Image (cartoon, rainbow over all chains, first blue to last red):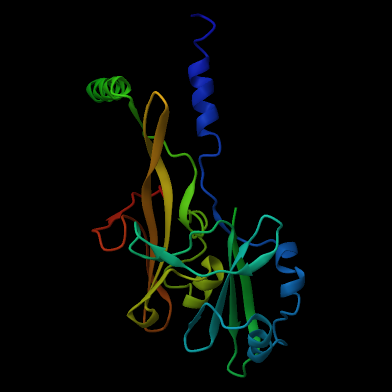
Length: 122
Length: 134
């Protein structure tokens, strides 16, 4: 009995380890400089370049000033486009895959990229 | 406090007798959404200062765009615990979800006027989350 007493807290610690779900965060510089995003240069890349390379955005805001693309990363680390699915519990379309990345692109009035970011989780 | 602990232990003991277990502890699984958003992560988004553009660059694509872009909502669902039932020959464990949301409202100048964490699924009455908890 005396030896089994510490098992409770240890079991609890083991079960609670990793209790934080993946947190949203800004991608590191190395993550955003991967091959398929390397063409993005603030002040140079145009909206047309982006649309030709990445296709139809998953969302656009403020007209076409802000475009977003959603991607998921597979087990091999490769990124591919992903869409929301209807979540019965959420009663709304929501991402259900793991490792979703959201690329946000902000354009100036002349159609050139002025700011961009990649938001990932983990 | 002692009474609620006794009640909890009583329910736990009863559920064990019945062959089922309620495990009311979060496991860290994300059931839906892109990821949990913490108050620390959005602390740089100051009301009256941050623009819609700043918010989008920080948080990515929103799950809901309401009122013509004046309201952006980010949603995610975490596992808040399990209901497990078993017997000889098999068993089943069902996670019970915890729906979370971050709602951001913007003024006519596209600057942030309100930022609030909420609990509850869309369509159900949501409740604000106490400060310091996400």
